[in-house]
Image 1 (spheres, one colour):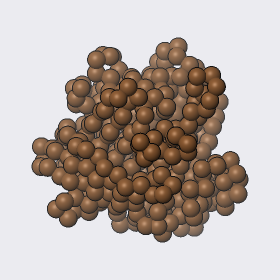
Image 2 (cartoon, rainbow, N blue to C red):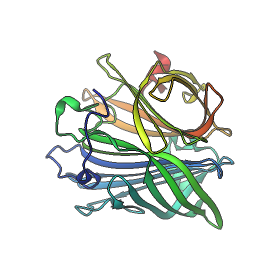
Image 3 (cartoon, helix red, strand yellow):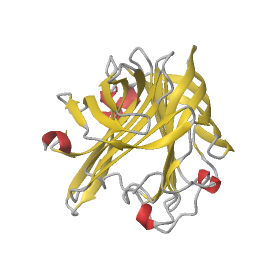
Image 4 (cartoon, one colour):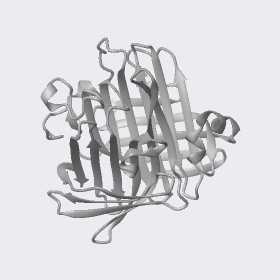
Length: 338
């Protein structure tokens, strides 16, 4: 199924009416990379109206190794708001322009691997007051599915409606008395429907922005039934195009994080070979999802995040983020042990 099969209407920028599924989730996500300041980050809100509950998550990677993390849970949220706790998204022009803000205290980590045991890590970490204020503009059209045609659903376990858009970002980050200019590129994502983080066996979600304005997204999803999804998109000069993602290869750290990734991408703008290397000093963040399985054991899925330096085969360089999800087997990623 093509990620560009449908046009995503303005109405889908906003909240959707939920079905009755307890696992119904509406999520809005932004990542960004600012080459001049070296700041990489992402902000996400998620709402589960049938529980009711909401979460706000922020991860910000500073250029010299500090990682800022905030996790907030709330009860019921407004029926129409794209806001949870400290994160607010203002749709100024659908699919064209948004304002994204975050204001809260965050935990500061020199080694975010400590979040493997998040409760004690968050309680022990020093804190800092942080404010993010970004103007976000679209870099090409949104692409994905609006959820109305089941034949076009990309991954049922990852929501029914799901679209993405390359973006430009411009604004500021304040950490205590330090201020960073944020100017660069990124990717945003909006999804709604039943969500099961433990549905895939594993996935890799790649987002890279290059110095010349090129942006690349790649998605590899391995299903538990043996199926494999490979999708890619590329953007340049305000236009987005579908691309083809080839075989993804990875080099692991001893404790199961992605140190290096490479993959070919075929696109209307030319064939590329994309290489990502975890930026030094390495800032691997392990988030976890727990799901009881078979009524007896605990299934654990880890979602790893880190900033990466990207390079194309022709020498162009960029910055971005990769989300690496794996079901854990004996504490190690399934694709590493398999």
